[in-house]
Length: 78
Image (cartoon, rainbow, N blue to C red; front, side):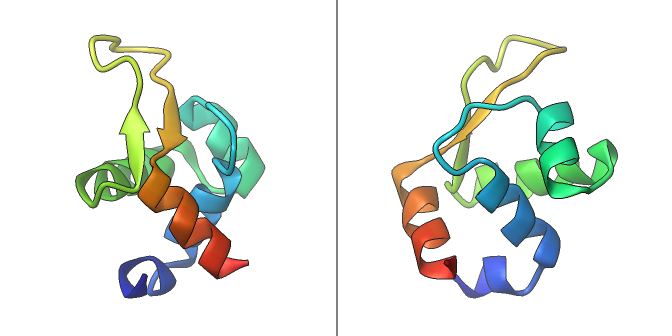
């Protein structure tokens, strides 16, 4: 929880994904963060088990969603 609270970018990316499956460009638009930052944040969140990449073989058009743990964190943020 503290890991997420320390960064507004992490919070905004997680809340953008709430109950959705999105590509980084869509997350960037919803969270008003540049795509390159979104990609970095998604990598951090994935390593912490908060989001999952649904199509890891794809080089373009990658899609992400919250894990159950990520959903729990988003609920606590709200």
